[in-house]
Image (tube, rainbow, N blue to C red):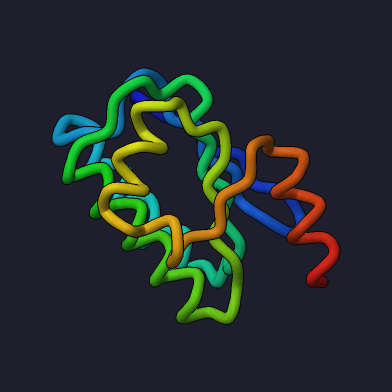
Length: 114
């Protein structure tokens, strides 16, 4: 598996390793649907170790955002490399997504919303 999932009382943490691409997207999509079916409404997607993201990866990010919004929760992206950040900005998704530099900032934002 190219990602890890940790369940916490107020959020689910997903850490992606190396790439968010066609290889990772199908498995991560299944996990995201399963997470939302369990009524988990807040997800932190940490890309600190992710150096590459393609269109399939962006699709997964948008899916996670949509699932969280549907449940009235928050989806937060953290740890963007310069190349991934550039891709998100070029796609104009930075105006749609909540992006924080660190996981700690994301946790603080979720806790504040509680």
